[in-house]
Amino acid sequence: MALHGRYTPSQLRHVLAANNKLTSKGNRPIAGNITAPAYYENEHALILDAATDTINPRAQLIQTITDAFQSINGLSPAEKAKKIIIPVAEEQKILGLFPRNHWITLYYDPQTNKATVLDSRPWMVSFLYPTSSMRTQLLDGIKQVYGETKAQGTQFEIRYQGVQHNDIHCGAWTARNIMDLAGARANETCNSIEQQVVAYTKENEASVVQGNTDLAAPRTSCRNVHERAVTPGLWARFLSFIGIHISQDRPIPPNSADPELTSPARAIKGLNAHPVDGLKSRNKAEDGQLQDAAAQIPQNPPVPGRSTQPGDYPIPTSVPSSRLTPF
Image (cartoon, rainbow, N blue to C red):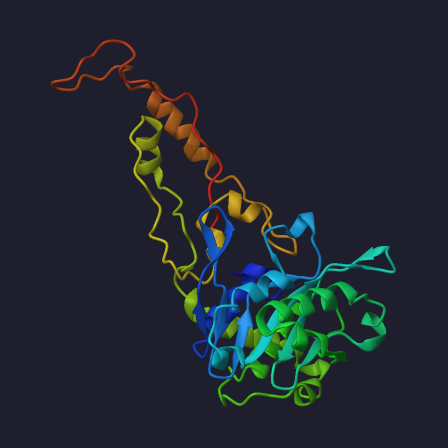
């Protein structure tokens, strides 16, 4: 899984799940039987699953900010007292004309009843972005978890770090901000918003991007543990061609940190707030070999104790050529 470009929700979850100082909790349905962790937690914070500040057809399988709060509504008062952190995809249009695809960190401290949008971009680039939808959804979420009185008294502010001078690495910065604010780094010390705003400069971007890659690397060093289907070999595909189907799927753990990959085609199709690469056809030469081999097989091979009447052993006329390409 490449972590040097613009993050998808899947990649953001991948980085958070790789952090051994965070524990994934619950399951949130995404599509059919596919789920994502409802939130991550440690002793300092609750990190809710990725959300969007708008209802967007391109991101229909990513929850709203209000929906994100529903996952913690049943927690104990002690758990609800922790800091709430949400990676949010900004997808409103600037001046009603220019759509934005940008990750920010939404931070809420129930103790001070103060919410902060932490944006890695400079003020000059982001100050025109409308945050009214984000604020409305946040207050609705606070209301359902902490009550209407608390929601009415919530303070809301925006802070700009000015460390990201491109359109690519917002996801990497958001993941780092989340881990720093939650105390999920090596020193296990939570940064305040004031500390986080000045903790980095633009010169730190390469190390932040590489740090996330190194963090997630043990999970994909030999085989991507999020892979849910194995590209079948020549023998397995031959058996499938003649009507003998052997499952290549691996068991899916209920607390999987990166559930989108559990379905080869459906899950990747419209899952993310940012574009993802499509699946590619593979092994076309092998497909031709299979069909040549199948042409030499009798239409009704005799089987002891079974009828050999025509039609007992139909031979498929084509072989699917679309297969899951492992990330």
